[in-house]
Length: 346
Image (cartoon, rainbow, N blue to C red; front, side, top):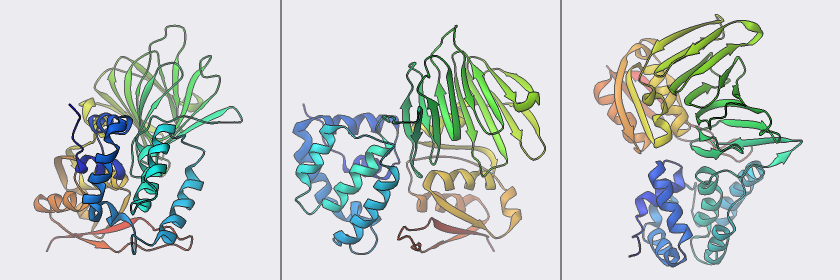
């Protein structure tokens, strides 16, 4: 019996807000040729929801296509799309859905497709676009997920030397190999393992680098011999680049890797940290007008909620009010990040 097309899951798929289960389901829809007509019908029936992300008139193909060309030109080296999916969208391009379909070809498969890497000067680079999460698989069988706005690099001789460079956040499930260490390099430290599951967050704009171990063992090495730390499961190591010092604490490791499954989990965390993670997740920018708000401790779990609903729910229990600023277009024709102002509730 053929699976019904759920337009809500399809919309989350286009927006890059998904779980692993959604990813597998939508992949099956696109692989099944008999689902083509149902996919078109689902999108047509709910066109008003799919078109709301386009600025101006969604039927203005010139504006939409110009934006697509800019984005495709920027990301084209990173991803190769499956020929079968390209063929599907090519056939559908003659109907009213042309703007959405062209957008989906770029956005959907740059977000959800296992990334096919490219080679330039013996360097392979995997990029996860802002507001998305990207699954990757390395030549040795190791795999993982890249969080929004993150980059993973490795050389084409990876099988001989299992070393990757990370900018941003990634969750790794490393294939065990007694003869070959696996090393994750960041700007301030590297993580050395044989086979394990762990999360690394090393965003260049933040002053701390975090390593959270879920299974196995890892060794965290500071550069120039600054420090060496052996970690056990359910431990988090935090390195502060300003003070050049690190701390280790016991945590629930699953909380720090839940993002790969489409969950945002907060457990007694300061609101400043909560908003930072939400901002990265939805590719928005928060402006906090009162520093005291940042200290408020918050506990919650969000799954596949829209940004408006997430902020509304936070405001119900936190002493804040909020306002959304209308997105502005930059000189390059690309819309800037959405800005949300957070104030103390009076």
